[in-house]
Image (cartoon, rainbow, N blue to C red):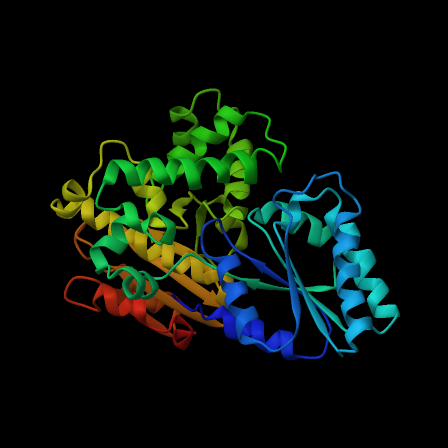
Length: 395
């Protein structure tokens, strides 16, 4: 069983003096619950693990009752500290207010109860945290599974990772692609849209949201203007609606629209978005008529999957390493991805077979003087080496 890097971060924070609630947040099906349960087995602090999945959402006393169990344990045994874990906490109505009340009561009474929260809906977690728990929590982002994790767990090579992405629960089905697609749609895509998006955010046109998601996935790695999107989608309204829907899908770690890199902020916001999925499995499952054999045997098609996979990896790492991700293009010259953090700039070009290598990397270097310029794929850095390296070392 894979032990994720964030386990060490969580353990170190649990072992610190009580200061903040720890929130493990990430997209669906990336192993948040599994990781926390592994951590509980490694630490010596007594704990209780509660899952709110089957609890009545209107049971306003459930959180308080569970909290009081921990207090009773402390009083009865005389232990100095205790840990409570609430899984699927967002499914309880007004959960954040209840957590705040109990947490603040322990603070006033100098009671050393530490707390971990996790849930499958990023949007509901974020809403509750920002509304009621500001200043009382720290976030531990848990991203999609990396190539190394999929390789170590399932023996995947780089081609399988590029095509099938990084959802561990789907790995057992990849030898039956029809079954894999059904699993992806029923267990990941449908809950992400129906529960994380439509039930947590007011969406005026749900059918349009579905279309935007489908379009964004199938065009991952492509520049697509809002005007072209409007011409493609039915009942699309205006560009502002599309921008808002892409922002919501980005908050759910599904797809986003990357902005063009520019020192002029207004040019960034006016730029044509480069659509990008957070996990390449979404590109594959939402591209009709595609198969592994078809994609892998056509260099131009495969090049698009490779470029999108690199973008997915960078986008997923952006939250963890706290950097901004862009693309750059001027006339016929372009750089696939630009990373910025503080004063550091890193330019990354993917040599994928989609097009001839252009002079964009050299032109960008002369204009902006990046700390590093990197070419991935082809005769340059191998894909498996890129996906296995330490991206923070470039920053």
